[in-house]
Length: 506
Image (cartoon, rainbow, N blue to C red):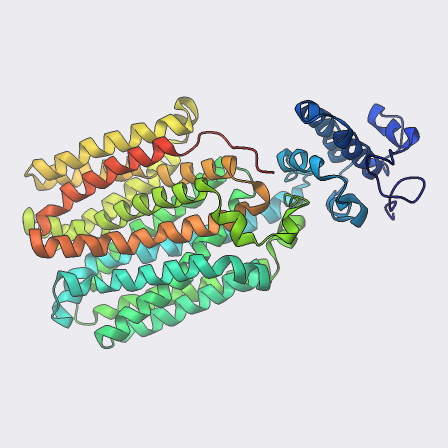
């Protein structure tokens, strides 16, 4: 049914042209379903007429309208994009739309089934991201051996990875706007495949490091896209499970790469990674079929959050980068991911040299990521009971205490157990930050914000391990633990200044 262009006189609603009384009868429940548009226009006009300090009272009415629209399974996509609805005389209605939950219409079993298929596909994506991060630790001593390089030079692969993450975080918002979610995810997975192909032939070290740049580029885009998509579903349990699959991949990779690190053809490990990446690419093509995220969400019965009326004219990068919450969350994730990757990447070398662990030290890296996986599933009830913000403080403080055990207690078994428990406590932090981001950031640019936060944060998985390598060159690998403890302490400070609630953005 065609939507009415304006009011009964054919003029756009404004202060001088109120809607007719008959169009507002829907507010009392007397009219038929086709009236939601007129009701929204009436509400918009009312907001214009009211003083700013009384404007918020209309939010309750807006909620009632939305509830009625949901009960009819009426999609508001056309309503919100109608030309007369975005008339410049109605800017005060803007902040009401920003607060509305437009993500859940009436979901049929078919919608739930498709949602699960999308979710499982993205989980495999995150499994591969974790697999990539968990690969490096056990192979690091072998790479140093083969290429005859020290701590600083071997750390160049981390820097190459970081450059890929940073480039991805900057370019991803633009690429996703231009090409769409489905296309960008497939391109990213293909780039990752190229990186694994180069790694598998054990080329010269500069080419090997460049392959890590390609891997970082592909991984960062997929990680950000997956996290942004699941964030739009507004489900903390799904986000926890998604990140648990990252931990599962990071747990499985060292078990395999440790075996390859002990044979001549160590680089064949990357053929396993390549095979997984091919499967990932095929799944992304079959499930999302090169569609935009908005179309994918509508396909599973969920409507994307509407943009504010004034934002269509404004550059999306400006909207994202002027929010201090975005930069604080990005810094926190950079530290969080950096600590995880530093422990996962260097703990094998630390245990091997400082504790005399031998060739089996590679399994300690699996213990860290195994704990990470379990923590993201088993501690969900703790997160809900304690509160997401408070529990992050608790996890970091306990992790610091356990890392002091690794630093100060000269026991191979004791250190291995402590590393496993650090992973258990560290696991929930990342998904908790993602959930917090979905609560305090504007919904219409949430995916773009998540893209930057995740991309910049993932750079920590490369930059901080590189910094660790530089420190190890001067102070020895024993300096790993005091460095990690200081990073964890800084994370507490950053988390304290991150806002606990959203602020109004006009």
